[in-house]
Image (cartoon, rainbow, N blue to C red; front, side):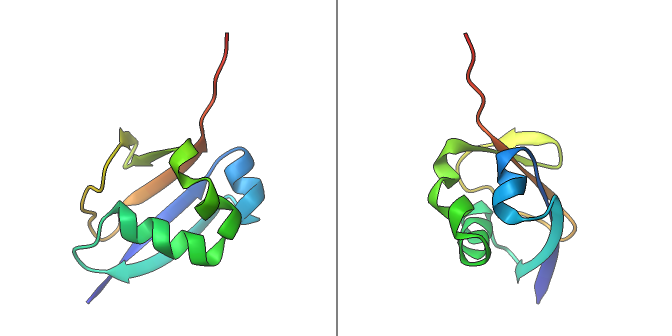
Length: 83
């Protein structure tokens, strides 16, 4: 079985993806690392800087490789620094 995820891109990540939103399918039981691999195939520029991006699942920032569920929304943000 496969699950469908809504991917939302913000800021320069949207520029790199060429879209603000898309849907991907990955195998059931997968985690963020599978999303990373799939997006890196689709959008190499995002894949290269993945570890410098902020990732949220269902509006909560995540780290590591949490497991995902069908219909989850993944948001990808460029890290912002300020002073």
